[in-house]
Image 1 (tube, rainbow, N blue to C red):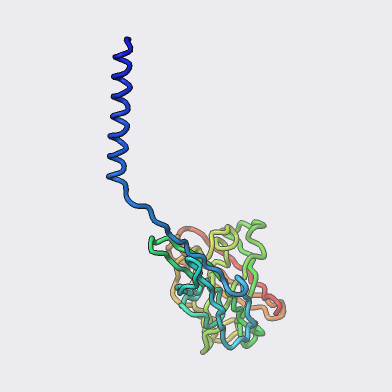
Image 2 (image 1 turned 90 degrees about the vertical axis):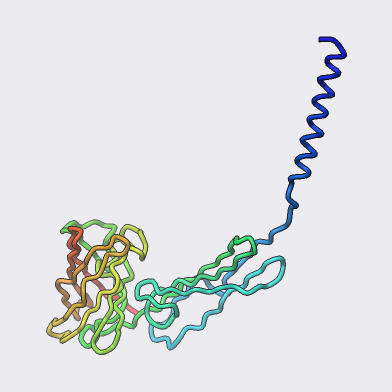
Amino acid sequence: MNINMKRNIILLFVLLAFTRCDEWENSAEPSRITYLPKVEVNGDSYIELDCDADSYDDEGATAIMAGEEVEYNTTVAGRYFGGNAVDGPDFYDIVYSKENEDGIPGVAFREVFWPECNGDLVNSIAGVYTANVTRNGVISAEYMGIGPIIIRDLGNNQYALSDAIGGYYDYGRAYGAGYASTGMIITANNIAANDFSFGDPVPVGAFGGSNEMLTFTVNPGAKKIVFTTTWDAGYDFSVELTQVPQ
């Protein structure tokens, strides 16, 4: 290759480079700065109330964006008994969030536990319990002493059970509350006589199906309740609840 040919090739490369740079400059979009929101909980991220608390006052959060404090959104969800306000016994998940103009979120979380006050198991079965759970007669260590399980007093001798399988999937397998069998209502016709009525069958969380309460027996001296349920997925549960001292 002679010198003139090399010179022509170099000039061609230079020409192409300038052409591409010019194209890139013309097609480029201007850059800009986006500020990320930072959200932090005011106070503790976990709060446990007294069982006889009258109300709950949330401390909220602080959201900062571009060096300035900004407004944020708050959502509250009762984990087992529903509702969008901290207004009685349950676990509550509170989420504080803020999105910037590009839809990028900043989020902070608080968990509030409002325990139910323990009944004497003679006049009231309300309270907080741990559970030993067997499924189809099988006993395993990871399903022993799990919880807490809440029996919430609804008034008029009616009670709501936080999990009609005693936390088997929620706590035992650590799947979370989305796999609890919530919504079971128990009516105490005569606690001393172990005379109870049960509400309609309820699903087992995200698994669905129909879980029916079969038996419910109270032992006030031992501070225990034993109940059995049957789930149409082919599983029978026996749950022994032990009241947690308060």
